Length: 411
Image (tube, rainbow, N blue to C red; front, side):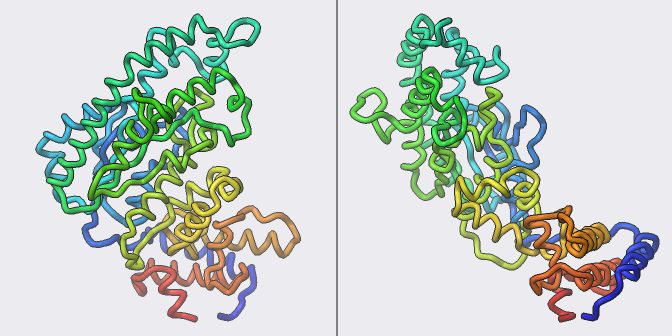
């Protein structure tokens, strides 16, 4: 494609703004694909500070262009989910689902650990405050608090784990009786396990006590008859037959601070946590690719947090997979809003101008890669021209396909 002067590009940008209005170009959805999400506040996408961009269920559904029906509720336990599955409307949606996503168990266990007569996490705004409350003035563990707490947990947890194991088996059987779709269960992660994160919490004696306890309830303990290794919460999930198990416990292992908001005494995943859960689910689903995948929401989460600069050092394989998926149908869509329009052409011109002036580009990473509309390895005026031409033809209904189809056609 011929190069154009930047003045002409700017003039075309202005003309199209006045002539075309705003056209939305979204990725084509898979025919009738339906995702039903069940579970607790992880699946609802609860965010205590309001900064969550999208839940893992939303990212997965967006990637496949699928309809999402979310029945998850904040605070749900496995018993709540068992009861919910008797609802006729819920059963009907599950019966017609292609994919059923299940996240359940955190409230069965963590509520007992963090909200009891000896420890009430709701009274603290940071994990450091909570840990300080479990220490003496000298900084040593306060056994007048810790010993009663430990005794309480030793008494309460076996029954809770037993009930959970019974419930999760029942949930799986009910789901299998209702749908022929793919059923995905997640193991329960330990948000307090932050051994590999750069934080003083990891070396706190009181934090280690909490972390060790939670790990024992989730995974079991070596040579322990009360909490047998492999026969506690996550063992119940891993033992399920004819379902897909996503081992979120292993994904989050040692990185509670990186993947959750535990610093703020919030056990929920942050944006990075939901991002890697979504990628793990997509990998496990292994649904045949049709060309209609849309990684825009995944890319938005990836680039809008520090995941783009840090995830590679925490989980290299997941990072690589996310980058590949995030670039599906991405070229031309510089701002990851699922459209190719005037804003994308403008962003491309800003990259070109900055590079030409030897200045730092205002757009970097995968978003800058998306600006290479013709995929020739550089971002230039020809890319902006291509976006503007596509936008004009799409807005005038002269072309009805995607930008990448358009770019391939005019090469």
